[in-house]
Image 1 (cartoon, rainbow, N blue to C red):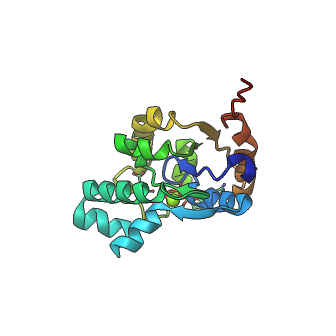
Image 2: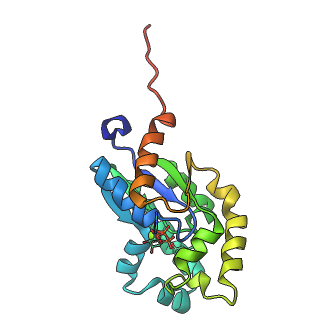
Image 3: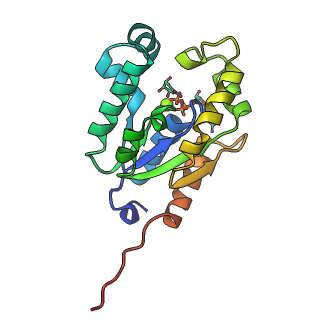
Length: 183
Ligand SMILES: Nc1ncnc2c1ncn2[C@@H]1O[C@H](COP(=O)(O)OP(=O)(O)OP(=O)(O)O)[C@@H](O)[C@H]1O
Ligand SMILES: O=C(O)C1=C[C@@H](O)[C@@H](O)[C@H](O)C1
Ligand SMILES: [Mg+2]
């Protein structure tokens, strides 16, 4: 599979809690790829947690950092890249994402909510009604996530390993086959 991919990067997109970080790490291992998580890079570069960055500098500054990190990362090859849930909201990010194969982990709101209920590291969920916040974010972003090359529906009870295997099995269906020129 990694030879079929010819070093093309995999970009995982989807809502917070959909499993981009967890599944991305496994995909990298299976493909013999490096793994990068844009949220982790932002935290390392900024020297602050995502909560702190949102609180002290605001979401717009966070989004600028996110675009800067993505623009750097896409100059490398052989990477599985877990992105932040909101990376799809900036038009300029799509020009970077399209350097590689874009995989949308499409998980239902109830599952996202259950996974993130006890997690206070996502600033956008510090809301009176986090479930409703997830629902409205997904509604706004669905048309953007739909622009992915590959949509992987996340089923309740499926392990990260099973999901990674499904992604790998689906990749050949979206790889452009080389055109042979005989004359
Ligand atoms: N298939 C799975 N089954 C059970 N739990 C899972 C699965 N995939 C991920 N999780 C758990 O759900 C939580 C969210 O997963 P993860 O951090 O990978 O999501 P994410 O898409 O990277 O979110 P974010 O956009 O906020 O970075 C974690 O606690 C993770 O362990
Ligand atoms: O969905 C979002 O907008 C976010 C998801 C996370 O990955 C982080 O990038 C941050 O918490 C914002
Ligand atoms: Mg993540």
